[in-house]
Image (cartoon, rainbow, N blue to C red; front, side):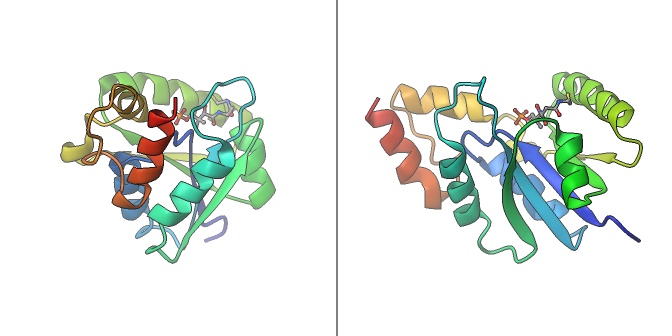
Length: 162
Ligand code: PNS
């Protein structure tokens, strides 16, 4: 089968255990996974694209078939540029489904070849989001249960210096 590259796109601001759950599980399904950070100049992020990619590299170091990348513009264009046939997203809830359904339908209009796949987030991570992690960290709360240990110090440091 061709186009066996699967892209896992997102903001990853910062990467959480929820993201790593999806990455670990999809890494068993495809020979090559690209975890792709959206470089969107319109959106204010806590971490730069380079910082987010570096944190992902650390957190995924144990998985040999994961490459960390970034893209700007349309996801379908990035996928064409690397000849990727599949995109995966995690679903935590019905509200995720609504947004993801719209995005998948839109992407299928923009690309006939791209196939969108969804993995249900494992129940123990279903309540985690990068946004909630940022909020807790910004108030000095303990985020150690939500982000990988290898990036914990860096995330905490960023919020302490704000
Ligand atoms: O982690 P996020 O913020 O939920 O990820 C959303 C993301 C980055 C996957 C999505 O917004 C995206 O790929 N945007 C790029 C622009 C694009 O392709 N838009 C058309 C599809 S809706």
